[in-house]
Image 1: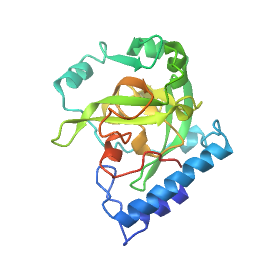
Image 2: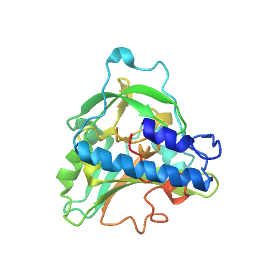
Image 3: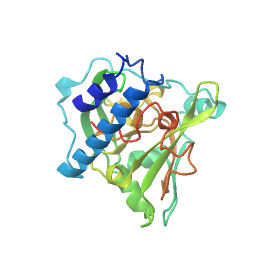
Length: 248
């Protein structure tokens, strides 16, 4: 985390305006890219299953800031929220043997992992929260991921600005099968609320907050990131704002 934040802070006194703003300074981008690549190599070196630090209930932050989209504006999403997400389906598609379409009730019935972890935003703030939900690996195993798959791509219900571009993110399968990578349904012993990504969001605990996609509708297993947005692996990555690998 220290390496990443220092890198992002360098270059012409650049101030981080937040996860919704763009980093435009070429020097800062170059330093950030170098730091992120070093962080990825280090995390792979120390072990694929090395765990992010977990905390006790006493450490939970009194306020867990909601960032990015806090209320998707589409009529479809608002109808789902009004009905308590009773008709919401999470799809698992792409390079799988058995495509899945799961209701929130079915996700809730799966074995869940609970973890109290720190969320670190690229904007510079952190908060500790207790998350619970099924490990992503459970769904990948149930779907039968094909050998040619390299990435899990998360397609979300929210759109950004006036462009109407659908938010998406992606991780590689090393992080997808990491034991702390879960599909969170609960935050601090309560069902996930809209501002924090209801009904289901990603928690990939060894990466920065913008990788933790909210309002997930579909998980696509893919051999390449081509064909998703501009092919750089995420909404902000496509815009040159942040690096694809956001390890901490």
